[in-house]
Amino acid sequence: MSCLFNSLSYFIKEPSCQIRHKICNYLESNLPILDGIETSCVLELEHKSASSYITSMRSTSTWGGAIEIQAACNIWNICINVRNDRDHCEKKIQFIPINNHYDRTIDIYWTGGHYEPIRS
Image 1 (cartoon, helix red, strand yellow):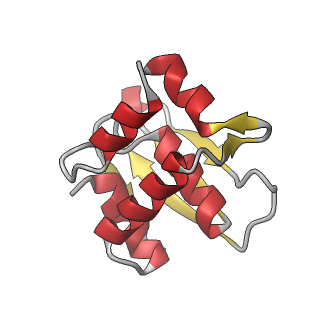
Image 2 (cartoon, rainbow, N blue to C red; image 1 turned 135 degrees about the vertical axis):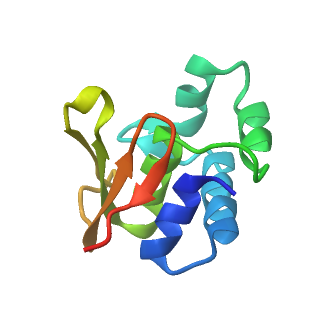
Image 3 (cartoon, helix red, strand yellow; image 1 turned 90 degrees about the horizontal axis):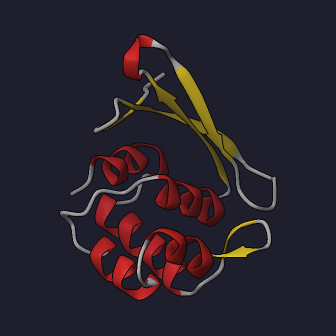
């Protein structure tokens, strides 16, 4: 299982496999991933087809990333702060739902190759 989905599971309180499944279903439904931009448009910018990307993402050995983080924000109405400490320069990337309304904020840490929940 991917460390991103495990990290999200810490906060969402659902099994990581179920979180992955819901996110893949969201992507497959071609709902907006960003305001006014359907998922397929974003996926096809970097990948040959949205369907092959989603098929790959359904595999438990496939790592999640920014697209899946944004989908999680949209599904669960949460703000996700990703703290990036690569090159010893801490930066924060904030993901918010497309409706700009969220119930809570969670923080996860990213090393460039691994996600970990930031426990408060």
